Length: 267
Image (cartoon, rainbow, N blue to C red; front, top):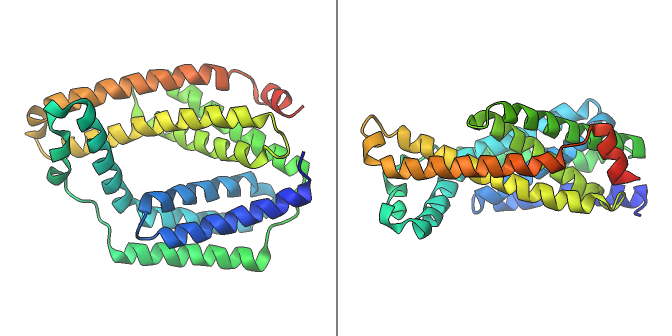
């Protein structure tokens, strides 16, 4: 089991590394930059209590940086998804679709804003570092992450055909997954949980990408429903399958109460 001092150094190093990677990725790998921002926000959530008043400022800066990059990320993801769909259903000519979709706003001003915000976070971490980590703080952050993900799962269960609660659940699953990854050196039993959460989050991400593509098609206008009827049917079928699969996976991952889950994975 790793020492708290070693983990403290590791967490700070990982945060600085993720920040440097996110800054370097703009504008060449927007999807990668946003993924790094999500990981950073997950780390901040885990350390919310130790960070105190610094949490809000750091979290807001990283959130706003990711938002400044969202337009270009969506365009990139839609293009990749269409290529994947074309392999499974070439008769629907998915590869022709991206050219028909209006591009999202992705100005260079957004890139500059994102880099400036991320640089400000890096400077704050360089100046103030991280507060001392205690087992109690880390345990509380881990349990809270599990509790939030479990709560969002239960909301998604109420209406599995509604994409909004599934998307909110996915975000909490990702945060919880990163928490488990960071704290595996302290509690090795979290390793298996992290792998299962990664698979769950990937499936929920696939669902969200298909939902977003469906909305982009529908926004083309009144004629889109008829022109793209077969494509829309395929997207709906895949979303339904992905949602059912994710909810089945969660029956094992989130069956326990937060207290029981904590005891199983850390004792």
